[in-house]
Length: 165
Ligand SMILES: NC(=O)NC1=NC(=O)NC1=O
Image (tube, rainbow, N blue to C red; front, side, top):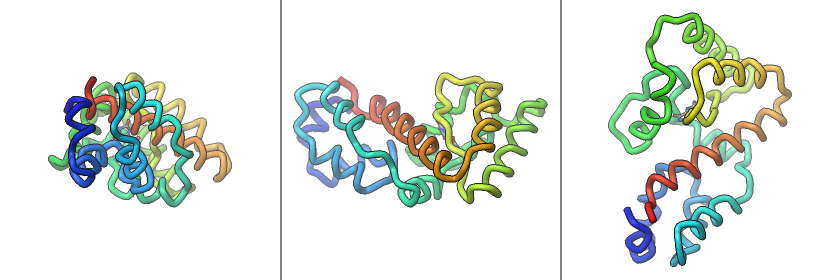
């Protein structure tokens, strides 16, 4: 939708419109409360200024997040966004990279008890695999902070697609 519509929607509809960006109430409420935005840069600046996601917000947002390399199922707005974001990875390929991604996802979930999250847009499967293998070596606090930053990047990219100038 365009910014002028977003600025004038009732708050509950505005919240529903941006929730696919990231399903964290505190973030959605702040974006809606910042209206009316003079322009889209002001909207994106508000998103960038939000405090980092806490580990519990991360876990809530990841509860229904598809794994990297697995085809996001369903016809929700989030699933559609995930499919677009993961398009460059070539889901379902029987390549060595795909096999190592699946193994890395399993290792990651075993170690950190959440789905591995990375901003996939603009990244190759090989780059994502390198990031996954690097992040598997991090301690829990560092990894939670990095995953939170990736979630913020995904939220910002999605918000840019949801609210057009
Ligand atoms: N597990 C994930 O990292 N998933 C995703 N990253 C994205 O950028 N889109 C996704 O669906």
